[in-house]
Amino acid sequence: MGSITFEYDEARNIVFTVDEWEINTAEDVDEFFGRCEEFFESVGKKFYMISQIDGLRVYGEISDCYAERARTVFDTYMLGFARWGTNTWGRMTVRTTSAKANILANIYDTREEAVKALERLGDA
Image 1 (tube, rainbow, N blue to C red):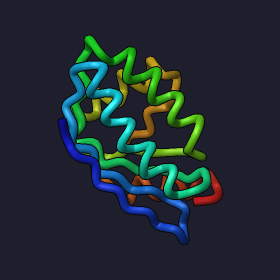
Image 2: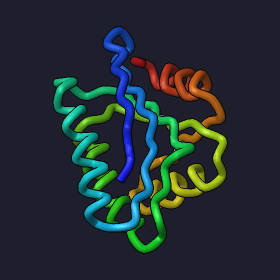
Image 3: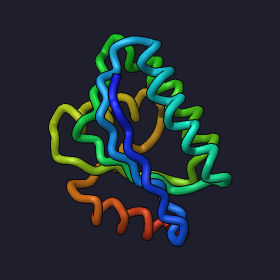
């Protein structure tokens, strides 16, 4: 169990999240992405996303399941995304699951760097 904080910047069409979650089981994957999808549906259109990932932990045994669900959520809701944080385990989690989902990791040290990276994509 964990928490996710969502903030939507409508002017830039960016959803900001703070992910505080330990994902050990398929039920954890379902709950984590269920909360995400509920918020994402409320946006009503595809958006960019920037996530603070220092509190995110996806354990090895469940990383394939997490990656598969992440790929589906990305394809359904997002135009692009970046993550930021300095916690080694959070960064490792994102690198591992991104590789398994065949998605670029896009990890930066600060929120500002992540925003600039999305701005370089063109529309954010």
